Length: 132
Image (cartoon, rainbow, N blue to C red; front, side, top):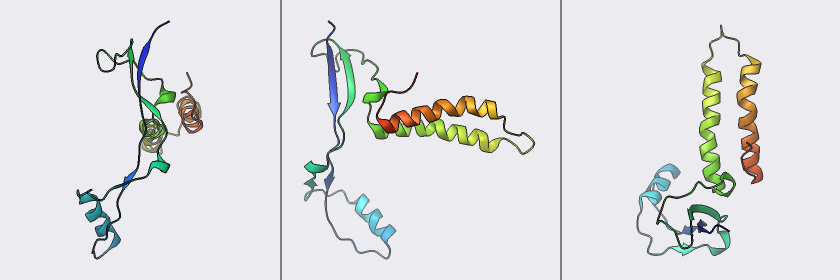
């Protein structure tokens, strides 16, 4: 039976409460983001994110010692899957938006491209593997 070394990760929110003087909320938010003093940080252990796979290597204790194996999409962080699929969806919308008025969108052409994109989006939301 093959052995695999798997690296898993979860995101742990770290936060701070700090007051900023600013003329508007947007400016206060900018000041907070630019503030790099985290000496009073707090960990939110109760709001840890999902556990997801960040690395796979063939063999025992093989982390970072050889080529990484592809991670099945189902085990990638959900937000990363959504971000990667966003590019596909944006591309489809841009193609449709750029079709000139003289060019009536061909329903069969768009269905052929939209249906797999919809199926993948639904799989992501359901926490399932990408459809083949």
